[in-house]
Each structure stands twice: as structure tokens, then as C-alpha cells.
Image 1 (spheres, helix red, strand yellow):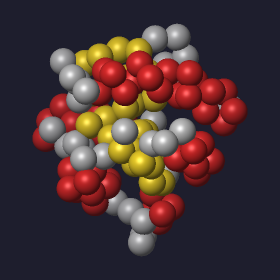
Image 2 (cartoon, helix red, strand yellow):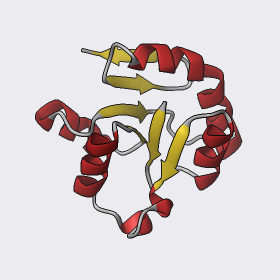
Image 3 (tube, helix red, strand yellow):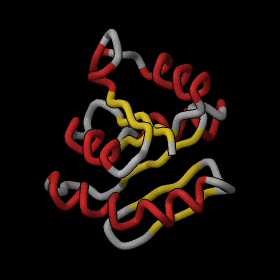
Length: 117
């Protein structure tokens, strides 16, 4: 999977995903770092076929209205510590990979994965 991890998520999450073989970048890896506008994140995701991983509901709105970014994983876990977040994503990575082969908008919380049509 090709992923782009948004600013409010830890850089360590991106690095752990990289270590699993995912082609992953964090917004801190971009020229404007965490100040990169959402519109540029959307464009990059489309140009590079990257799934945006975020907690930012604005991306959900953008996807439902404009079909941007390319694909979206919206994390609705609420307050969660970084270790729990990383464990949650790693434990669900195979299922997410399979789901993203057929779907473009997925929401994940602590207990469930919801595929939006």
C-alpha cells in the first residue's frame, strides 16, 4: 500500500508502516512539512495513488464532495495513545489492504472498520 500520513498523526506511525513494507510518507517528509495545505495533500495523493491516513474530518468532507484525496482512511479513535494507535493499524493492516483494493473510503475506530460507499 502507498500511504500518506497526515500531520496530526505521529511520524513514528509512518516509520512503523514503512518497516512493514508499506510505501509511506508523513507530511513532515514534504517540503512544507506539517504546514502542507490539505489541497496539496489531496493532489499528491492523486498523483502518487496514495491513501491519506488522517483523523481530520475535513478530508472526509472533501472526499464525499470532490472525490479527493485518491483514497482515504479516516481514523475515528478519539483520544488514543500512540502505541495503541500503531498497534491498531498494524493489527488491521492486512484487512485494510484487502478492503482498499475494492473501496476508496474507509473509517476505522477502536472496534470496527466501516466501508463507506
